[in-house]
Image (cartoon, rainbow, N blue to C red):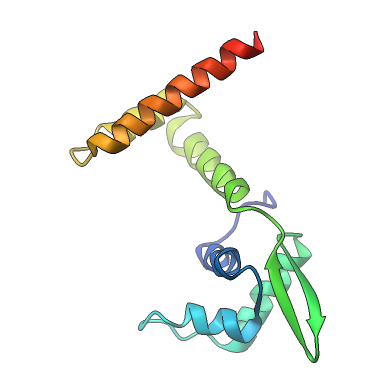
Length: 131
């Protein structure tokens, strides 16, 4: 398994750490349990944080008798890996297939479309500058 491939729950834990910058196991658990249909045990959250730490995705420091965790990987890095994995598995790695699928829906917002055009132009300029 790629070190950046994570479960949905691990992603939620990282999201808490990205939002808060640092958190104890109890703080992460409280944040995750805000959903009415979820009640994670403290030990479950601690186990998941330990696994993420072993994989180098979170760091911790000791404060008194507890650990305070922080993300050791950026949200951008995780997004890139998740999108690349989806692109490879579902669209054979073809960027145009991914973009075509996303733009093929009826719910494309004109402002979002303008932003996509802007991103394409920026990428074109970047590629021109490299050559």
